[in-house]
Image (cartoon, rainbow, N blue to C red):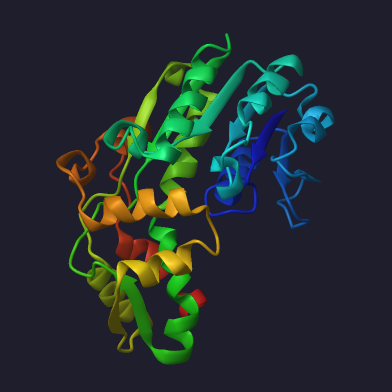
Length: 279
């Protein structure tokens, strides 16, 4: 049995589906009840209270660990989840980490994630670490304004990074959970091209078949919006990257193709698949 945390999110949902289609027994964990593929067991649980996961992890052979924003906050103890997985019999953990662990190692949220990576390496379990950059699905934050005003509002409109499609992250995660060849792998996951927020807005407009205006936010305006969802430290770390990406953050990684045998999906493909959210 494989336990998938964050199972209703942009990575967890396609990962759960891929594992089920591969014939695996899957337990999907999220905070709230949700529809699941046939044969997938769902458990409502809060990762901020790891002890409550003990029954879910008992008998698991592998765990996909994805942290919500509050687990990056001071005082959180996500490493306890790794210990519980080991105690429950798991042999493998695949951790969704962050590109910033390598490119911005001194950011507060990156320090915490590095510590979690280290705890996993020292656990005695088989492991793999995924380090994606920016997510294409972050554009869903614009969905309401596109639907109601035909507008995308974002900071740093002319500065791009190679955002990655969450479906690619999910496929790489599935490979790491199912294939021993990826044990001990650290994979940096990016899309195939550097793309700016303005260009993302244009791709959404092309998929919609109607104009989308771009409105540039100040950093303070963007941080105020982000901190409704994530800790201020994580918002600042993210804004630091998208304001001035360094050469490592602009690099197109070969790791998606190395694992999956195909090029990563472009943002335009993500927009076309998800355009219903913007209509």
